[in-house]
Length: 580
Image 1 (cartoon, helix red, strand yellow):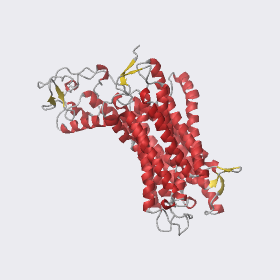
Image 2 (tube, helix red, strand yellow):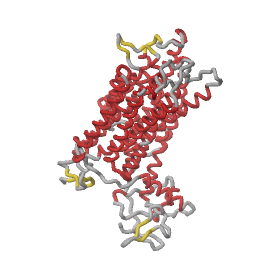
Image 3 (cartoon, one colour):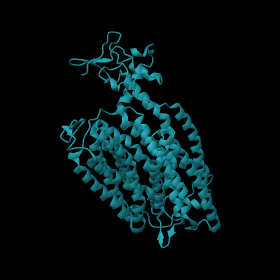
Image 4 (tube, one colour):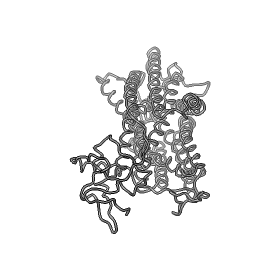
């Protein structure tokens, strides 16, 4: 067995020695920085809505939108982080740089909440004379939050990929270890979230936000030092360039030749002889407009010192065209999973608002409103354990398959989210009935907060299915050279889900506030609103979305790359190029 890894190097640029690099020790160091990132991001996000309302005196709907925009931007910036990692920095430098940016963000947030000048004077936000935070105060808060979002995006784009780089796929033992790493990656993310919504939220409410956010800053700084200590132990893989650029090259080449007719025989389309036979992909009939990028015309090749090569912006190989087609086939499934994350957004915004108005004491201990999300995280962990220990063995015994397919898991997640929103609407109706009977201005309603457990548990269980299903789907069904891109595509569903939540909240506010005195569905004091109708709307949208998803899942046919015979000679006098 080879003592080096063929496609990896060590920190000096030499072939990576298996005995000195990679494996579980460096992978654990990488996993550690992801746990701290989850601790910081979720610890801030799940309890931010109470700070915005209680301290900054913002309306409930505005507070919810700030949180969802913050989370949406965090996941959207994964595309930027992935592009930088693939094109310029590499995964190691990307992780180190963006971890430092997140540390700066949490440090700035700690300072922002500690200075009296950066928050309005204390008052009850429902009082007529209570003034919300001014533009300068909100500007500093936004700067801190979006530094954290930038750090989160850069980290999430590279952590899982750099972790799997530490294992050699050609080594059976290390390949099994890599599978174990993937299986436990989401578990440890959930563990970091669990710590955030329990310990960190408790510190925020009972000790002080300064201490809680300070813990985030110090923890990330320590995690960066530990990460850097593993520099000599990591394996580094050279990037093949950004897949985003490759996609645009195919699209541009197809647009250039949009008026040309496709050849009657697909074998006349261009295929590079430098592509290994095992990596070539057979031509398909879908999205034929993209096939025009592989039509050979005069001027497509450029002469170099001792060879000729195609200009990638003018001519693409069939394999590259088919890779773009594979990504295009993912889009219908991608689009129909976005609504789940819109539902998820309510668990860290309006559901926390609900909890803050309800009876939360157990003996002499008061449960922080933000800590109700512990049931959400517990549902994820319990669901993952039940799936691994019970569902998979039973499914294998019954169907002869190792487990549910990725599309089946996504479907289950979508169904659970609809049921979760139905439970949320019913619970809110009960809460509003109590508020009406005792007085809508009552600060703590005589109704147990545990009424909200079903909605947290159902949506949490749904996330366990849909997150693992999406991650598996986008990684296994995308071209090998576009794994980072497909992971980024998956994370954009989270981003767009949060942004759609903000959009819906804004639209609902405008349409339900018919005049200056009307409170609307999403009133500043939710005891005067109709949050239950908003939840029913989300449940209805979920049902419609699920029907569309079933059609898309039926249309989608999982496929694997199939070898194709490269075209050895081309018409019009052009020969296959030599590798320059």
